[in-house]
Amino acid sequence: MGTYFEVVAPPIGIHVRILPPAHRRIYVGTSIFFYFNGIFYRQTNNQDFEVVQPPLGSEVAELPAGAKLLMLNGQKIYELDGTYYKEQSNEEHTWYTVVGKNGIVNTEDTYSLQIGDTFEQLPDNCKPVVINNQKYFVSTNNIYYQEIIENNKLLYTVVGK
Image (tube, rainbow, N blue to C red; front, side, top):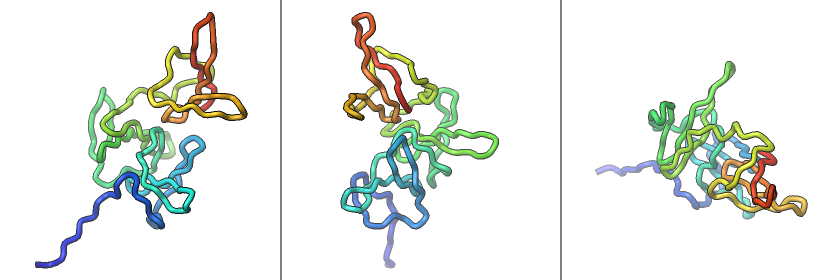
């Protein structure tokens, strides 16, 4: 009986010293990620690379091998290993935006938010950040919010993307 090898995706959290040769650099807000065939990496302080969850809002030029087409809320969505991609295109090219992971998909166009839009609640999983001694909240798709008080009510306004 011959030797058998199966190629599998690296698990989230594993560290590697070298990226695949055909990787691409991806910017999501001010964060830099590296991408190859459905796997996202982030460089660590140790100068190696950690496999991370796909960042929501990241845009890739091609779908990973094996992605399957789904119809969700009347939209074409591609899925592979719990990560969901929405096809985007213009006259020049087509790309795919990560719109969901871990079985949760956001098919709403969150990128139509405008600076100055105000909400009573922050989106789920926002994290506080301090920039120039000012507290902000950043969402998982890198929308920045600032607390404001209007008519004795705490609100959150979009201040950056």
